[in-house]
Structure formats: structure tokens, C-alpha cells
Image (cartoon, rainbow, N blue to C red; front, top):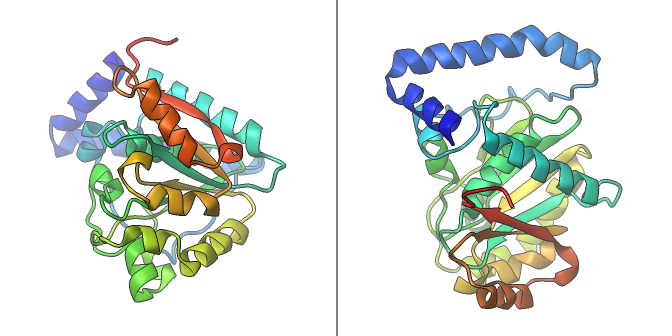
Length: 270
């Protein structure tokens, strides 16, 4: 926690400090880029994707580990990523729904940090999708504006290439939020959503697609969407979510798709 707090403090000191930290990050990346490619680093060209600029101060304030590396939280996400890869590789499944029993347990932050951790893998790329159509927060957590997202694709037939944004970080693209949509369960369970998941799943064999999905116990959205993905990760907040609530959520989810649970906001390692 101390290292992460120090990094947040540096970002808060002003734009000069932000630019210096970011320039250092970019410079270090450029120095090792050629070596990475020789060792099998896969990095597609995203120049055709609309570019969004992340706000480093907002990113750090919201505890998104985009530019940070040597903090304990990053190592925890590396462990989670490795466990997911070990359990999914060779199965043909690459679509992962991140959900929770209740709101406020950290599912969105988990989805964001997990996606950016996958982007550090040598032979994986990742697409992060904001699928919580009633409360779309991914772009807010990363500090950029987003007026169109998954709901506009499903309801208004917005062109998909215009919605897939590149945040300037290698190996990751994002479909972030648009306007809140009240009839979200119908959209998430629609044939158009099913076709989209199928298309995204098969387009790039080295890519994982991570969906930030709504909480299970607040409506029908997660229930409607879960059958369309390969796997489910359930986020549980330490000291908040009761076992009764967890068990109730599990009753609504396809048991064979659940990869496991992520314990969030735990004060010490278990």
C-alpha cells in the first residue's frame, strides 16, 4: 500500500511530475521493445483505432495499475492472470465475465487491472469491454470522455470499429461506456450481443476479452449475459459480502463456467 500511495502522491504534485513519470515509462518501454520482439512479444498495430488519452492523475487516484509496476497490488494481479491462463489455455475459451454479488465490491477495478496485467504478457493481447450498461464506469476510472459504447452498438447499430478505442498502451483496446440504458438485460441477452461475443472471440486467437458485467443480485443483466461467455470470475469484498449473498449469486450463475473468486480489499494476504 505504501508504494502505491507514494505513486499517487507523485501524480498529484502536478502535470510536470506526471509528464516526467510518463516520459520515463515510455522511454524505458522503447529501450526494451526490440528485445521483446525478438523474444516473442506480440504487439498489434492499433493506429487505425480511435485514440483516447488516459489521465494519469485520475488513473492513480482510482487505483488503476496502468503505469505502476513495483507495487504489491500488481503482483497480486499477476498471480490472478497466471491462474486464469493456466485454467483456460488449450480450452478454446477466451471470454471472461467479471462480476460480483453486490455493487461496490470492486469488480470494475478488478476488470481494469486484470486487463492491463494481461497486456503485459508476451503472447497475449486483451480487449476490455464495459458491459455494465446501467453504470458504465471504466472510462471514468481511466480519466477520459466516452459518449458511445456497447449500448450504442447494440441499440443503435453504431459501427464497432468506431467504438473500440486504443488508450496508447500496447496490446490493449477498450470498448467503454456510453449512455445508461434501462432495458439493459434485453440488450445483453440479445442475438446481436451473442453475435458480437462470437465475433470478438474468434477474431484474434491470442486475445482475451474481459467484460465488466453488472452485479448478479441487483437485476437480470448478469444472468442474461453469463451464458454468452466462456468463464466467470466473481469478485468478493472482504468484510462486506456475506456467504449467503455469495451462495445466492452462485445459484444464478452457470457453475461450470466459474473460474473462481477474487477477494478484494483484504488487509493482509491470506
